[in-house]
Amino acid sequence: MSQKILIHRDEIIVRVAELGREITAYYNGEPLTVVALLNGGIFFAADLIRNIHGSDVRVDSFAASSYENDTSTGKLTIRGQLKLPVENRHVLLVDDILDTGKTLETTMAYFRSLGAASVRSCVFLKKMLDPSKPPRTVNVNWYGFEVPDLYVIGYGLDSRESFRNLPDVCVITQEE
Ligand code: IMP
Ligand code: MG
Image (cartoon, rainbow, N blue to C red):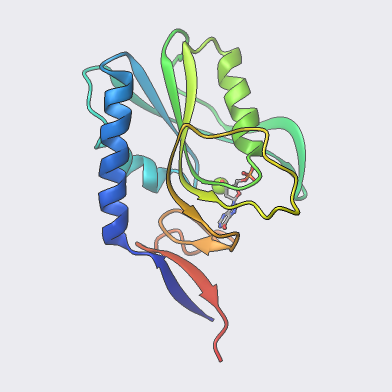
């Protein structure tokens, strides 16, 4: 098995800084809680948060899944709770990749139920959906890069929990 770089670390740095500027301008100093979705979102979140400026930016993390045995249940199973109250604060959820969107959709609904002033999302990668697949019922507010419908690893993205530590986004290729 070998890996081919799809997005180089240098491109990531430039794009994350750009997203940080857009998000900073958007919230314009309003109280903001950035929530990193574990585990995949922490790499992107750590870089992004250092590019978001404001005097009331808080950071928290959350772990949940809406899947059971690879099937979306629509019911959120929480594995790691928030530490900070989000009532009346703007919440920005940060995740690694938007695939079907089920996890993000269910998580956003949960944060709305906690009384957040607003719930928005920023994902590092947005997968191009194959037209044969059902359309997504959630959209993201910001994303770093759009990628083809391939399995990608690195910069937080795993394959069976490995490869999150790769500094570039890669595609696994078979060795000839
Ligand atoms: P969704 O609910 O289908 O959008 O699931 C998104 C989650 O699936 C992400 O947070 C990832 O953990 C995982 N995922 C989807 N596509 C990939 C991929 O290409 N590489 C690694 N993980 C992926
Ligand atoms: Mg994940």
